[in-house]
Length: 475
Ligand SMILES: Cc1cc2nc3c(=O)[nH]c(=O)nc-3n(C[C@H](O)[C@H](O)[C@H](O)COP(=O)(O)OP(=O)(O)OC[C@H]3O[C@@H](n4cnc5c(N)ncnc54)[C@H](O)[C@@H]3O)c2cc1C
Image (cartoon, rainbow, N blue to C red):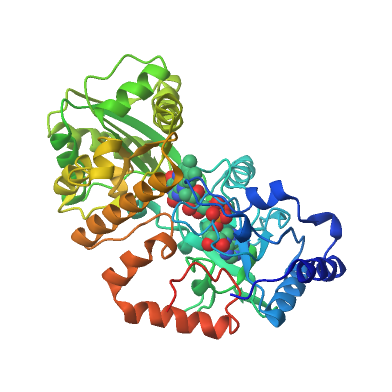
């Protein structure tokens, strides 16, 4: 990548101020640091910090910015909230950071049955607005208070949601507006609830890892809010809990919207913090949904029956919403508590299992650190995850006090182990997208040819390779 001199940077900033309202262009050191870090430990070097951070307010401004950057071959890094954990929100060389926070229009089109929103809106905001109209947003990441809708769509993640319950966000997108790296604005998809058959370009951008274009407007089908029913199960050990989840799939019980696992250590922490009676061992919590109360109740009762066949200490439907809210939030407070208590940063991973291998995969995750000296030093993982979605998050907490170089080595070891396990089970990450720190995994899992193809597709959309150029591995 060509590096600009100080004079060239000043000239570029002046040019940008002619294209975009200067109020939304900054070279402040703090903002440049803030716009180049993610929630992992990262090696920030002054010479690699972004030159400038720009917050365009419309597709037209994005278009001008991209055309300008493309003509001068200046890298542009698109940034929602920077919470993506696979490394695409940190940059190994300087460029322009395009923050999407001002692309924040929101409108519900009741007569058409969809809503449109800008990519910079936070997930929770959109979910709350839709809830006021009796609708449900099929995205629920743990990061929903901060993650942007554009980031979620670029990763095609639905967060905690069990894929086999309501699918992934891709299934709900009716259309997108995208600015190509060369500056052209594309309108894709349909205004109908009948989606395109055959080639539908929107699908290149949903789950496109931010490689092909900047998403500037999103049209999503309105999904009526569901009725919910809840349940919790306590086990004395993990194997029967895992078998209960497998049984749900083998016996074709309708999968719930959420089904979360806490190992006994995590359960103890979460329940204590929420002042709940301490659980006797690992915990399974689930939320079933249906069009009516009766359907949701029926589904949760079937889950309870199925889980009981594996002889938990207790498995029950939860009707006391105050209790349920505490149980659910017990899951949400664990990560930040461990980080604080252990003075450590989280190097969690995403290990995905098949239904058939769920127990073996759990055992591998339990021994995540085994045989890897630097991870042995970190210690045994805290285990929780979206077990209904076959995902474990072995939580490795790396001491903040370690020197940066050692912390980076630990993070790399964690990513290698994640890759090894996903290779072993023939799976792949279902949440944070591909490439970046996952490039070695992609190469081993799908072969060099696949990366070459993705590179070739990127070349068609982005001939000067300026958009998020650090996500794909070097040739
Ligand atoms: C505490 C915590 C909990 C989390 N929990 C979950 C979870 O439960 N489930 C889950 O799936 N993930 C989870 N994540 C990961 C993360 O929140 C998701 O990956 C989310 O999709 C990232 O959104 P973002 O706005 O931060 O995107 P960013 O990190 O800013 O961007 C992600 C990628 O998308 C690209 N991009 C962003 N906006 C656009 C756009 N408008 N056009 C084109 N490309 C774009 C970026 O260039 C980048 O490559 C968690 C993260 C944290 C820190």
